[in-house]
Amino acid sequence: MHEFYGNSKSVGIALNKDEGVRFLNSIAGKEFRFILITSYTETAEIDGITVAGANKDLIKFTPPADAEFLYLGRCRCIDSVPATPDGKPTPAVITRAMLKLADIPLSIVDSGSIVKPMVPHYTMATTHGRSIIHGYAMSREEVEGIYRHSIELGRILARSADCLIIGESIPAGTTTALAVMLAMGIDARFKVSSSMPSNPHELKLRVVEEGMRNAGVEFGSLKDDPLNAIAMLGDPMMPCAAGLAVGAMDHASVMLAGGTQMTAVLAVINALSNRLDNIAIATTSYIVNDQSADIRYLVSNAAGADAHVPLIYADPTLTLSSKNGLRAYAEGFVKEGVGAGGACIAALARNRFRLDADDILHAIEMEYEYAIEIPMKGVRNTLDG
Image 1 (cartoon, rainbow, N blue to C red):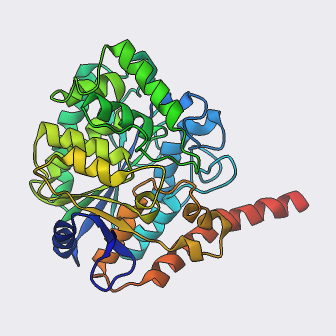
Image 2 (tube, helix red, strand yellow; image 1 turned 30 degrees about the vertical axis):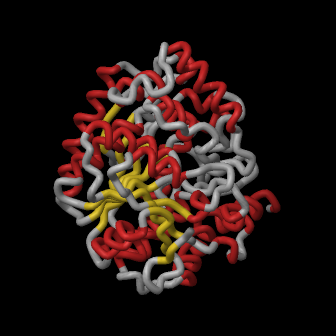
């Protein structure tokens, strides 16, 4: 059952209502900082796993291009804004619109991208994740280093805000999330989301099961060793997001902004620090309403029986958009990414929830026009000329 927050019809609480209300009340009118983690796993190169890129060769450019677009409003490492093969734009369009609307500062943290973002950023990892199908994604030492250094960075960044929004851009992140959660004893089979309307659950599970066999890992065998689960079956985004959150919670609230990838991060935080009193999962209504996944189950099980982490969501009302590329989000494409849901919630909270759905949709459509339609019109005019 969904519960809207106060009089707002743009923000809802899908799990743990009382805690969700408390969390949203605590961040109303406060100062925010948005953090985007860029990362990469070779798992993304398996056919059919992801559509995060116009083609297979461009997938590795998606994370840095997302970061560049958020920072500059254009991309440097590629010629255009990242999109799916059939032209659905990156959710960075939504995120950038919200950060501009509420004047929320941005930090980029690279944790294992192949292509490095050509904008100012922090570096937590210099090497990317290998395919989990081999059962050896990273070394334990690499994972520990990322986690440790990210804790320190989280402490620093949290001193400049009341709430950190931690988003991610990593293709194939739901597959690595599935693997880590299974290794930690969370039955995430057929429960993680996908950027595609037809969720390739069977393919993801085959990849994960082969990786677990090669790693010698069984269901739940790494419940108490999440960093080893990440080293064998995860990606470099996970220890970075977990470390940032753990470090930040001494000074600020934390929104883990994303879809089912962030439930794996929540499980890691729970296992390592057991500090879940000032944290929420923030996503879009498209993830909460995804009939091919179950984010409520994943949040509940990642947090554990004694924790009541709220699952909050934003409804950008893209079903009402005049833009085909944006309406596609409400039709099952992309759904979330680049912290879009968390950015929407932060923009609303920054303005004490006085903005309405029309304000949100208008800002997103304007960003879409500047980023997608006007550049495409220029290309057409060039070709016509």
